[in-house]
Length: 156
Image 1 (cartoon, rainbow, N blue to C red):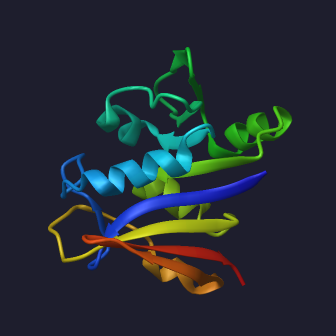
Image 2 (image 1 turned 60 degrees about the vertical axis):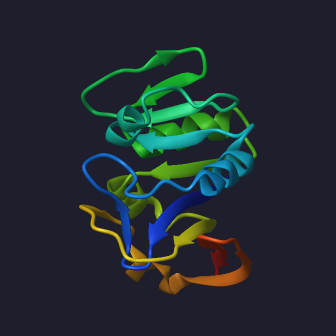
């Protein structure tokens, strides 16, 4: 099973502020949906609660030590490895890791690839993407949009 991080990050590394995205770019959200639709998405509890709903067309896998989530396309686990084991056992081809900061830091070194939307501009924020961890990954493709550029990274 391929483990793929998908994230949007500003030029100064910000991914969130006060539990929300610090930008509003519908085209980037549409890109995110197109990429992840039909595959499981793995997220931490805080990010899931910020989204505020189950993402349709995807199995939503939430990592939480304090709360249990279930029903419909929603399942939770106490830790990331248990979630990966479940997804492997159920023969999912890939999983998209969608955040937040803690989940990215815990998975970036074992992921098979990253789809990173680099939002043009600097933003104020309190959550950051671990950009320093990209050293073991190589950009293999770049696609430009008006307000962001998407970089596809693979393991070297």
